[in-house]
Image (cartoon, rainbow, N blue to C red; front, side, top):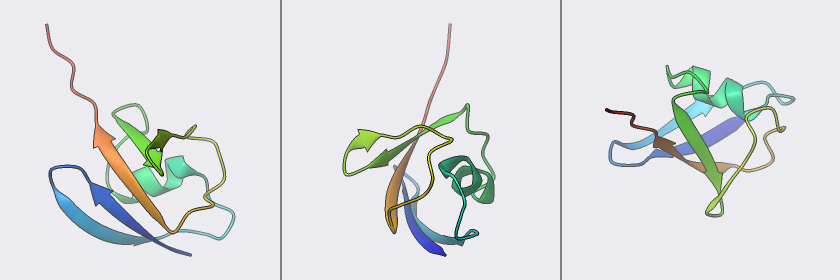
Length: 66
């Protein structure tokens, strides 16, 4: 399955994942850990272990500081 990914502030990419993949697999294909990003579908966050059911997602990198 092909998923179009908008990396907020970084542009767009297309990744290929298995048909039964979850959103964590999409994130790993981008080179990130599921703990460093939030995946948004139609503007709402989705759980990393939810099966991919969208062909376009937005990925927002989380920033921590102190």
